[in-house]
Image 1 (spheres, helix red, strand yellow):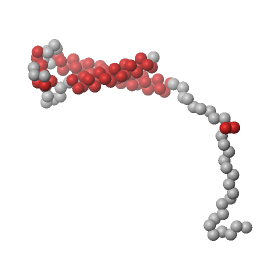
Image 2 (image 1 turned 90 degrees about the vertical axis):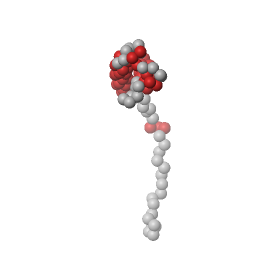
Image 3 (image 1 turned 90 degrees about the horizontal axis):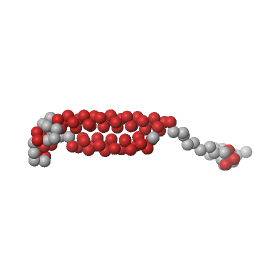
Image 4 (image 1 turned 60 degrees about the horizontal axis):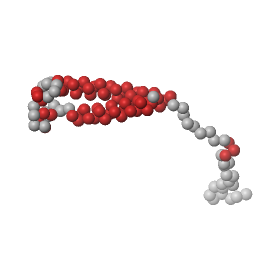
Length: 106
């Protein structure tokens, strides 16, 4: 199930990136970039902008939903902690007591 969510997540991310790059900004006209007006498009003069905006919103919602689903999946997966037996842990080395500098050892 997690792999299916990953596939939708990646596809939604790539699609959102592509749709955002295709949309025109406030001052630019996408039709002018290709040498034609937008009124001759498949969706009409304003239908293209509405279609792209709605599709981007749906894909962004899908992206956020898959992000939340992947977060839930990662929080439910068992933690892989390794138990180390006490016999394999090395003992602390034994050191001689340290005498301060200038002190006379007894």
